[in-house]
Image 1 (cartoon, rainbow, N blue to C red):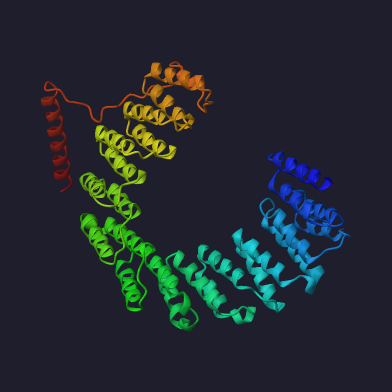
Image 2 (cartoon, rainbow, N blue to C red):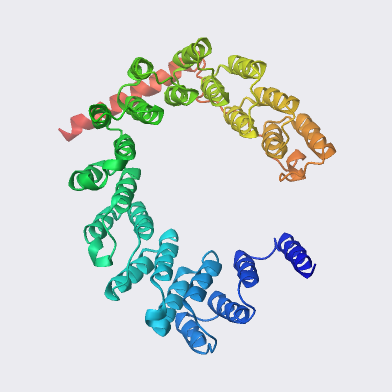
Length: 479
């Protein structure tokens, strides 16, 4: 009974600690798991490390006053409690102080956890210091830690450093096995360094024979990031030669690479070449999905190819792959951007008629596009459609439409929407000042150029002739 009461009390406290920062919440969670004797030490160290008073030297002086029992697990718990709130430099100074005081009593797993924390925080200096100390002290780096380190270094643009550590993993007592080889290949390919990743594959083929399908997918993705269609096609051919059949992910990756390449260099080849890839997919009994078609529709929308977009949507309707909300969104978007507002609304109506229920983001984006191209009347029609679907979350739409209407001079409609939102109990971010014509400036379209009347035309032509004659006289004098 006492245990049940304590559990309920902990649940109550957790539900009412939303105003606390994550550091305080983490301390509370750990305090419920630690022995009662260790809770004061956890609280003392956390408050010292998370204090915003003083610099790093002051922090170390405060830590030197600690008289409790410092353990390896306690160090990891402090890092976990404070990693989201405390600057990484204070965490680093605390960890170095702990390492100096505990020395070999600080376990390798906790040292690895410290490296992972700084890697996730993308602090290259702190990560480099701990990796160097780990190497000097003869500690062992595990494969998980190396994988996170490699990924972080590549993201920071230091892929050569990630490869340098990989080549010398034996000095970090980390084996060059399947996990570490796969980790560095995935990290390199994620940022498009496929050539360097292939070098790792070439030198360590014997260690990754069991995960070659995953390796091929990573290499294919790496070449696709570079939009290198030729090399991506080569990887697919190598997969087939090795008896690894490309799956839907592989073909969608290649299709994205092909479409984005054609978007830049051959827009007219977007549709025929993409449809050829889909035909190849079907020949291997891999049915293209809506994701496959949406890749093509997205690129067609970027080049404002309206007819081709509508044709692809019709192809989807007549095939086994029915369009989803993203497909309809991409087509409606290109129709709105190209000025086909009525047809765009018709596409949205067709989608609703098919029983597809889009989310709020669908309407937010399309209404934003219509307001951006100064077609607020169509945006209002789309907003009415959104309300008929009873999706809720109308506040952001009101905040966009009301100022847009008032700056366009339609204060009456803006006031109507304002009252409607208030009636529904929606709190708006817009100020009521937008409804005041004496405060809000109404923007009227400006004429691109002044028109010259027929009466003034002879006068203007005479002025042009006079300027030409003056220029000729000046050139004659110079000669």
